Image (cartoon, rainbow, N blue to C red; front, side):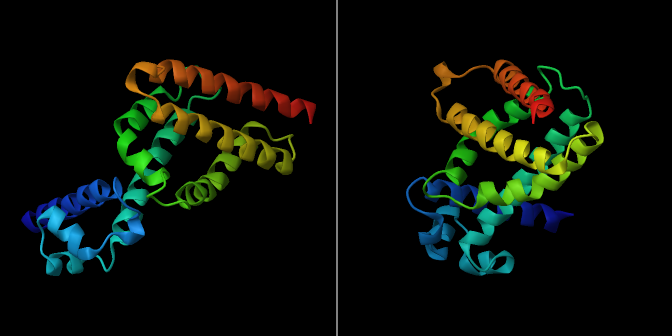
Length: 190
């Protein structure tokens, strides 16, 4: 138990150090030496857990995917969606704002978004097929691409705004949910 706590604290320190350094430079330009110095951890300890700083970012991304997948899955349990279905998701986005803007920014991982979308697509399409069994799969795939790209662009813009410009998570959720609802209704026109 004590060792697990020690490992978690070490990994947390390395994650925080990586994110701090990503404010100044691209993840692939961060060295193990500067990462360890910033985290006050020796290199030997680093190599017990990772072989390169990029692995830490991958671990952070996987943790975020699991967290947000669970939130999205929970929101979909209340179909049809209500205007506040995703407000908890957007609360978490605000909590993780700095980390997400670093990952999605110029010093982060440009493939992060595409990787997450590829993981989410079969889950979302499966749910939509249950809810809309009469719609062709190619229409659902078209809609997924439209919704995921549009909503993610809006989320990134929302996260990058100053605190005083923010819509509340509830208002942001309401707006995106309504847009998604109208898009699903547009399937009848295809």
